[in-house]
Image 1 (cartoon, rainbow, N blue to C red):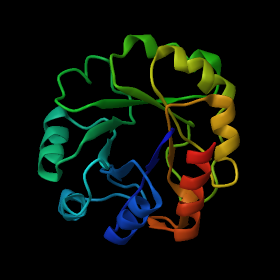
Image 2 (cartoon, rainbow, N blue to C red):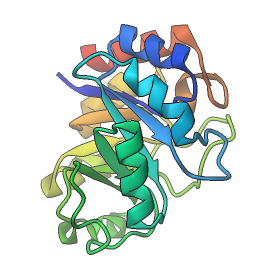
Image 3 (cartoon, rainbow, N blue to C red):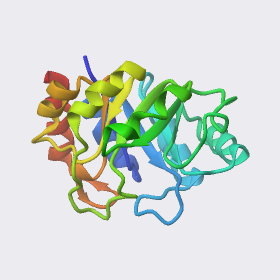
Length: 203
């Protein structure tokens, strides 16, 4: 069965909602200046409240390794997602599973993937982040091709209405959603979260 990550968690109530809906992982964005930025002080108590087998994922963007490791330890993160221009060498040596984001629009964007020795790739659009507006999906057929290079987490423009179709075309290992299940930036919509997880899991 496909795995589901709900990203951009900023509140304990949204974390509990996502877990109850059946999410496998929750994403916490430690990127300053973004609409869903959270601090370790905010995230640590949320992570402590999570049940076993739900993975807290920290999202970073060109942060120094020392900073990433300190945040991971203080928050007891289960995986690390890197969304910036990190090189394969930058991502070596972390004690947790590493996810590298690849921004995809054309087939050439997949070229760097073989250079990375990571646990999974998250395929996203080239937009820096969403302020709450709908994002355009990446080409799902490219996501399917990318599966030759490792586990694929499909992101960008996914909603409860299109995630089943996306899974059918892309055949990813997991899907990731943020603004597609929000009531407003940083606040999740309960109905959208439940509908998204159900549609993804049944696809």
